[in-house]
Image (cartoon, rainbow, N blue to C red):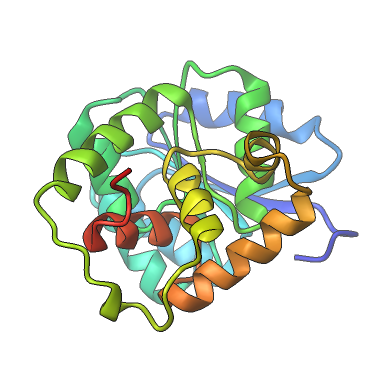
Length: 222
């Protein structure tokens, strides 16, 4: 996506009134363009292929094909499309399944509009976005599973530095580049450089994949 062009958004939800309201809300943002609406996962996949959105706002529970299954298929067929799960459900099962399927963000429908705008802009830049309540669930699950998983540094292309490990653990907590920079008292540009190095060493493409792989390798232990 060029910085000169608006972020192209596809809304996926089985409730027509919600889609219409969300379309109206997003359309007033000068850097957003809602390019379509879908009422189920299969329709979302067809529209994503034809319209090529930058960001997809995906509900979880829908007829024909649910949001998790649709996200998983989109990750395989349209990896450049960034999916944000936008739902009323904050059950652990939905959170983890959505992220495992390839979503880069998970928001509840009662989130403040500014948080939704932040999530869309972050997703368009290839960043992940999790509200603190959702991030807490992810961190708790990471910690639980990390205790059961031995560290396997040989699984990395190249070992991470101490600073990269610090940044990786903050990524796993849902921190943005700006928040990481403030926490570690370094420039935001330096954070971006470290994250690029982390992705290369871990063989991943985005923050969610990095956090999940870090969990699998036991790198989230303090």
